[in-house]
Length: 114
Image 1: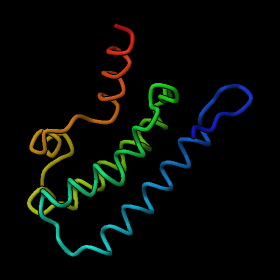
Image 2 (image 1 turned 60 degrees about the horizontal axis):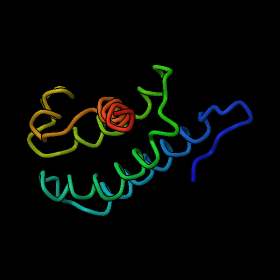
Image 3 (image 1 turned 90 degrees about the vertical axis):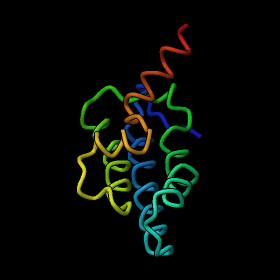
């Protein structure tokens, strides 16, 4: 589900998914020794990105610090992929054919409004 307070703010929800995603990142990185692109991306999309995007149309953050918290998860995980550790975040996204999480949420909002 999605957690909101009495003022319909989703800070607690965002904090929960950030914490959960960090824990899952650690578990995956400790459990699997591979750092090859394909298995790493499958793990990320299946176990982490799905949490970061679940119902994002409802709770999409607008404060920059909340946006950065979420983005840091993807930034961290992609930096662990073999051969991409020397690239900056936007170069890694381009190489992996990914968008930033912020860009994906904006896209979802536009598609939903259309």
